[in-house]
Image (cartoon, rainbow, N blue to C red; front, side, top):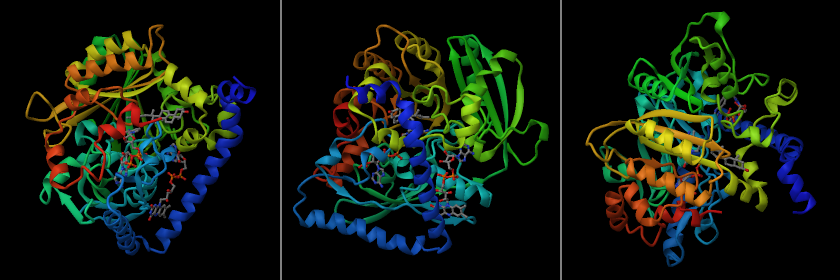
Length: 498
Ligand SMILES: Cc1cc2nc3c(=O)[nH]c(=O)nc-3n(C[C@H](O)[C@H](O)[C@H](O)COP(=O)(O)OP(=O)(O)OC[C@H]3O[C@@H](n4cnc5c(N)ncnc54)[C@H](O)[C@@H]3O)c2cc1C
Ligand SMILES: NC(=O)C1=CN([C@@H]2O[C@H](COP(=O)(O)OP(=O)(O)OC[C@H]3O[C@@H](n4cnc5c(N)ncnc54)[C@H](OP(=O)(O)O)[C@@H]3O)[C@@H](O)[C@H]2O)C=CC1
Ligand SMILES: CC(C)=CCC[C@@H](C)[C@H]1CC[C@H]2C3=C(CC[C@]12C)[C@@]1(C)CC[C@H](O)C[C@@H]1CC3
């Protein structure tokens, strides 16, 4: 390993602190100003038609030029929140989808209409001051509406509202023949049900209508330390089934220790219990919550809404501790906390081959979605296979809708749980391929699903067992997609990413 490579791996924080943090700051400022100008000039809605026509033109040109290679969006792989970069973008026709604006906030219909590149950070910054929010707000700022629709999104309100696609009323797409369609549960419903999890393999998404709900100023959050796996599973299930809880999330810190958090929105507060966790000098949220285990008492706090939504952003859940080991140190926070986190996209862009290998061989990043009845068994299996803590568990209701993802063994909604494993495995037997395959097998056997932003080692057959392709296959044939877009598997499998 060369000198520079050695520094970049073992002292990545030097590069991140001296270079990436300031660059991330300028990038944020530039984007903020650009969006503000667009808003002030109110030009976004009129520009949409033009931008839509440009997407359409590119697809018509592709048809006229003989449909030579398949299509994907031109969004560079390093900018995306998926763990790896896509290989396929190099040899496919890249369609420019430069659609980054919030188009309309319709208070009457309680709908916000957005373009696909609008990020979660943009949405909260725009809607919250107006007194509105969307029911599910996946917490990392840079996640985009397009990515969350075509993949999936989940948050601590998902036990009530479902996954991100379940709060979307309609999708506007340009199909591979150049036709523009707006699909919903009432109109072109097969397409509407098939778009989620299709990873851009049915058409290019150009606008989405998302439900809005009124936003209050604070979240009243109750922290409850829970000990013992049976207790953790029981308390989690009870809290998730209790519809009075607008937010439910558990952080598991060891085999037998967890903190359950349940929350509701409120406009009133006990001022001595206000905790503005989003301030730059505040401790990382997961570290702060861990402290609750010591007192073993139930405590209540009031957290400003936007700070709650982005509670895991500053520490990228617990991933930043591997990159900036002293990031949660008080002095660092006071002096430089306002610069954190570095942009995920810039971290991806500046990864070297060795960092990538290091992450591949010594790290796991996976979200597994299983029926809540499988939670205990899954936790035990993951403990044996990876022994990674903290673990994020978040409940969600999965409606029985047509499409790729729905409950398998009952034709009604079912409560599921997302088990998020992020970190360095603490078992000697960890092997990225074999271990992940074992996890995937367990998820298939449990009638569950894997989130596809991370690595998957499933074979095509296993992938088809996990995801229901019946409507998807039918639609691809009917819409003549086979020559136009790859199959989902060919975009998400490990061999399609580097
Ligand atoms: C008046 C106004 C009008 C707007 N109109 C539009 C519009 O028409 N179209 C549009 O697309 N956008 C609009 N926006 C949104 C604006 O573009 C966003 O503020 C911008 O995208 C920056 O969002 P951000 O979350 O990345 O940045 P900031 O809010 O400046 O945050 C910077 C970083 O700090 C962190 N952060 C912020 N808050 C918290 C918190 N509470 N807890 C933890 N971390 C936090 C995040 O990591 C974030 O990346 C508008 C904003 C305003 C103020
Ligand atoms: N809390 C949560 O829910 C979290 C979710 N995630 C995951 O991150 C991903 C989202 O990341 P993000 O960077 O926003 O998205 P990406 O750019 O990674 O896009 C994800 C997929 O959606 C497709 N896509 C995106 N926009 C369009 C469009 N306009 N038209 C057609 N296809 C499109 C992409 O196609 P193409 O390859 O052609 O560009 C790609 O296959 C999701 O997979 C999500 O599940 C990650 C972290 C947290
Ligand atoms: C809440 C859900 C469903 C998922 C959270 C996933 C995140 C923890 C990951 C999504 C993208 C990941 C990346 C990294 C860390 C973990 C995520 C933020 C890195 C920053 C790790 C360091 C590498 O060099 C780059 C990675 C980019 C993606």
